[in-house]
Length: 226
Image (cartoon, rainbow, N blue to C red; front, side, top):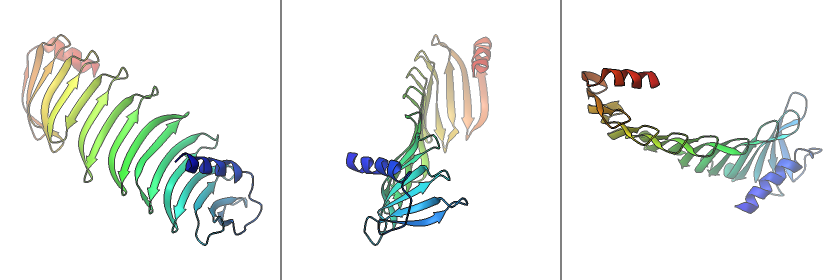
């Protein structure tokens, strides 16, 4: 893995300053309006490309992707006009397979995991690298959701068909209920930060059937916070 990554990064540097002519080593597939190369296939003496390199109009490298049998296969890296890496991905036979990452100032801001081009997980991060929220996906459907405060305490955790819970930043339970088909269903209970029950709502497929408020002042304060 490290050797492949090194090869990709070397290409980012080498092909940014060496595009004089087409040869058996590479083939220019398209150009920008100003005549500079836009898309180049690296042949490395082979009949089929082993890598694709995409350039900005300035000539700087924008994207490098490994290839096999004329399909994306292996590592892919993309950077912005300042040279910062902004995205990485892994392909297998032309399909996303593994984790796609987004970066900002060398920090991972988001991940999306794929299995044979099918999304399995979406995760977003705070600037400090801690998780912000995560969605698990199964058979193309969202199955569960979990979010965290910036101090690492779980904020919400629920299954789109199953139990749902929420917490205050202090870790005190905030609410609890259940969901069906991604909608609130059944009895949901809210507590204040001292653990006192302040509200109870009965839902049916997302619709409110009954709303029982036990502490109106606490409920109002909670609504204002949200």
